[in-house]
Image (cartoon, rainbow, N blue to C red):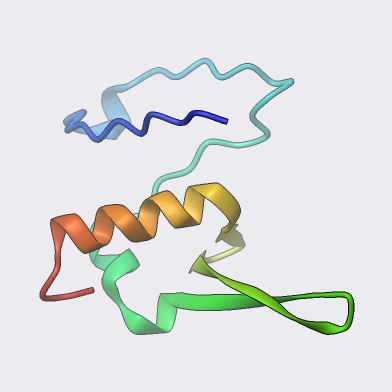
Length: 87
């Protein structure tokens, strides 16, 4: 798998009209950077395989939304680059 994350300033998101593919995207939502940087919105999921600890991945919480999997990994790496003193 090859993933190429793109970080961009899109300006005011309220002014954008997004048309995601409904077969690929269930919902589009935004999370402010300051929300992601607050410890109470960060967590980790621990996975087990064959009855033993396997690996740990980050999770970001935002109301009813939970950012996990590859998106959370990319988000964590981005926060480490953008805000190394805060994350």
